[in-house]
Image (tube, rainbow, N blue to C red; front, side):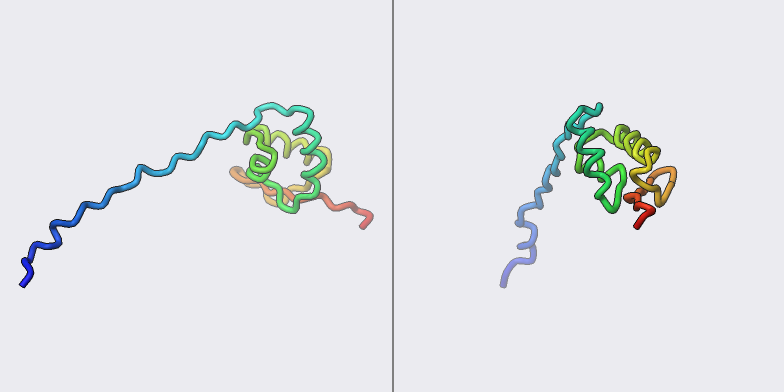
Length: 97
């Protein structure tokens, strides 16, 4: 017969230290290349939020909010949901369609 305390000899579980995400280096000012890409590409996005601009253009979040306000002012995008925490925009459709 096996002794009753065989389970006590197992190794204790080692917890991982966790994964650390690399700090991203996003642009904090608009240079010519990012500005051209912003005005050319954003009009074709169906869903436009701060997060999509940060992810696709590699710009800072505060800069993305300013860009969205500028694009809306120029009539290139249209606001769908205006919440204090999240603003959702879509491309502006032409009235001639």
